[in-house]
Length: 331
Image (cartoon, rainbow, N blue to C red; front, side, top):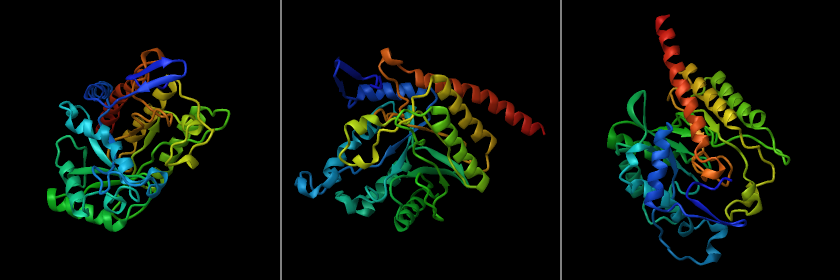
């Protein structure tokens, strides 16, 4: 039931899923645009490797560069698609893995990698924020703690090239002077029997926002569309079998998802000092096997119902936002 719209059911036990085409990317861009999604953060992987065919013995848990460069297929499709202006993009750096990539087998020097990032920041469809200075490129960090020197190098290269520093958001709780805000990738803790979405995911995420706000922490709230990674428990990925268990959160009803999105958008509007970027994340566009996807599924399993629930919340929030700010300005 969580097959993406471009999947095919072959029979009761077999499916095919191939989204590696310009046509599928074009459909994804249009789905996102129609339903109010403004940007996609792309996980950052190497674009080339020193060794294209390393021996298997040198690649424990398939963490060799050659095994990960293919994870940039979607990124390449997006960058080359004529409609990529419909949805902006940001980098989601993976320190300790692919930032910087030279330590992990990338064929780029550190200087070349930095210049490549800066070239992205210059693109008109790179998502920027106007915090402190206008036009700061938004950058997320997720994985291991980011190396402070690497982050300083990225900031210096960006400042030299476009005159502003990037706005950096940690998704793993790291605190550095160079990190501007916090966020989170997914959330919730389930049970083997399946925990309710509202109590074990939605309310837990709201509590985290409230904690950050009470501390005066700058943050971007995340609304998760689910937390059910049982497919990875049944068929573990080579790079992280220890992460996947049998506990899960039951999928939200469309009303529950709409309500949680509404909570996130309301929180952003009502807490402009801490949620200073005026944005909210949805986790995630296409994490179908991790169980928190929002892109359309096959029509027989609901199609774009998740995006439709999100769009209803966005439309209501826009009306509420206008009313809120007209009241504030009137006071």
